[in-house]
Amino acid sequence: MPRDPEHWRPWLKKTLQHVRAKHRMTKDVCHDSIKQLWSLIEDNPDVRLLFTLMLEQVPIIPPYNENPAGGPEFRDWKELLCAFDHQLTQGPLFLYTTEGEKGLIGFPFNAFLDWPMGTPAGISLFLRADVNACIRNMLNEYGSFLQSAKSTHVLNDGAEGWFNGQALSAMSEVADPPPHTKPFSETFTCDPSAPSYGFRSWDDFFVRRFRDSERPVYAPQDDNVIVNACESGPLALCRGVNLSDDFWLKGQPYSLSDMLGASNASPFAGGTVYQAFLSALSYHRWHAPLSGRVAKVEHIPGTYYAENYWEGFANPDGPDPAAPNNSQRYICQVASRALLMIEADNPAVGLMGILFVGMAEVSSCEVLVKPGDYVKKGQDIGMFHFGGSTHVLIFRPGVRLDFVGAAANPDPEGDGGNLPVRGELATVVTN
Image: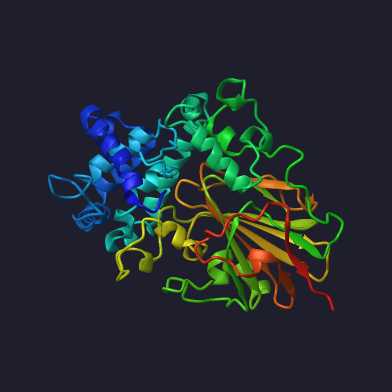
């Protein structure tokens, strides 16, 4: 999602016009996952109240709402659910404003909820387990569409397609910043002469691989060198992290027991946390940061559209449309996520953890390894599906690490540009 709402508001208005003209505003014609959510709202007065208030609490002033008729952008929760239903068969678009500035709609459901989820009612609503269970089913249904051949309708060189000149340039520049940018087809495994560049679905395109010549493993035989697990922008580096903390505060401190679960957290109390962000344009496969044996794999259920209270309308300066991005430290404790623990070959590191955190639509964390497997540094170990996300490396106390370059001084908004996956990230200090 772009920071400036003017870059996505025309798309939202067009979508609402279509829904109002074509949808019968009844759950009987909806997908199964929408019917389930519809029934929850109808049958539970607390949920229905929160859905209603969430829409009503968005101020009816620019830039939050420009509905000429007054009232919420969505007339009621039924219209919101009908928009969800429509989107379940629509691939994400790559849009630009008329001025040529990027207006990416990589997260369409996030665009529907961008302002409502920052309201007091929205903050409460998206922490509810029953609501998140329904949203999980909706996103799974969306994921099934994005893994089907029908989703290739956005993989073209049209004005809103992912292979038009502007889109290809944007993806290429994220992978190889100017002035040495390589063409998309030279960076990623694809066939530009084939329909949809040879990709079988939107998801097949999204989890594309680098060509073999790209992203070699840095110092593959040196166990004192840790490599970057994801193609990502450094967001935070914290040492002496508490086992338990009030992570919902404005500063969004890390709370290891909430991030990892109480049974997993104690070895890391007082340790080091490094977090980095993957944009929607980035490469989304994960690679082992070091060599060792997989000790644990755990999928931790959680939220999908929860954001930090202080990034929503509680912020005295007003909410940021990029509030979910700005809530990345907070969502490490509450969002749907996958935990991978590795017992490193290097005894100076020992047990370390990697937390792959789902954000909004990006909540399918696929792990390709299992407990007992041996992984080599740089090995493909999993992937995010359907959009950008965030990940965290966790080290025990006493593990001394010298992070290199931008990783040593992260950008708190994750906008400092990507570090290459499998490139040098940190060195273990042993003397």
